[in-house]
Image (cartoon, rainbow, N blue to C red; front, side, top):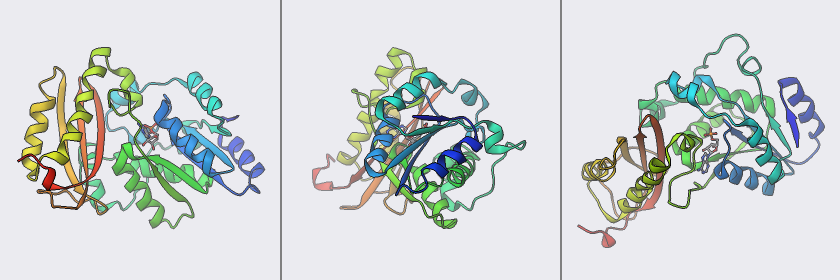
Length: 286
Ligand code: AMP
C-alpha cells in the first residue's frame, strides 16, 4: 500500500494509475473501524485501484471540544487498510487542503442545511462539502463510497457532485453495527464500556418505529422516554423523513418509504443513527 503524505505525492501516484480503468475513493477522518473497512472492501471489489484518505477536517466541526477530542489512531489505521488490500492512503496536511485559510467555501445546499444535522451543527455541511470537493479535485476518482450511517451527509455529497457536474459516481453503503446493534463510529471509543453497552438502546428504539406510529410526535415522546431512562443519555432529535425527497413528516402513510434519523448525546459524545423502512400499518400495534 502506498502511503501518500502530501498533495504532490498524491498527484504523482494518481498519474501512475491513470491508465487503469477505475479508481475508487473512500474519504475518512481516521480512527478506522469495520464500517470504514466495509467501504474500502466494496470499492476494492468494484474498481481496479482503491484509495482511502485520512484527514480530520477542522471546518466541519462546529464544536471545538469535539475536534480536539476526535480520536487519532494513524498507525493502527494504516495496518487495517493494509490488511484489506487498499492500494493507497492519502494523509494530507492542513496546508495541502486549505493553504493558509482554514475556511469553508459556500455551497447551495438548500433545506439540507436547515434540518436535522444541518440545524444542530451550523456550518457542518459547508465544511463537509468543501473538503470532499477539494479531495475529489485532487484524487479524481471514478467512484466514491460513503456510509448510509451519515445519511444526510450522503445527500449533501450527491447534491454537491450534481451541482458541480463532477464525473464521479457516488455510492451509498449500508450501516455496519456492533454486535449489540450500536452503529460503528470512531466516537464510540470515547464511550465507557457501560455507555457502549447502553447505547444499544438507540438502534433498539429505531427498530420499534415501523411497528408503532403513525403519529410522529408520539414517537418523539417515546424516544425520550425509552432512551433517556438511561443515565447520561439525551435525545437531541428524532425525525422521520420521506425517502427519497428527505422532507420531515408529521404522520406515517401506508407503503411509503421513510428514514428515521436520530441524534443522541451520551455524556458529551454525540451519536447519530438511522433506519430506513416502509410503513405497513397492518402490522402496527395501536
Ligand atoms: P468518518 O471517518 O466518520 O468521516 O466516516 C468516513 C466514512 O465512513 C463516511 O462515509 C461514513 O458514513 C462511513 N461510516 C462511518 N461509520 C460507518 C458505519 N458504521 N457503517 C458504514 N459506514 C460508516
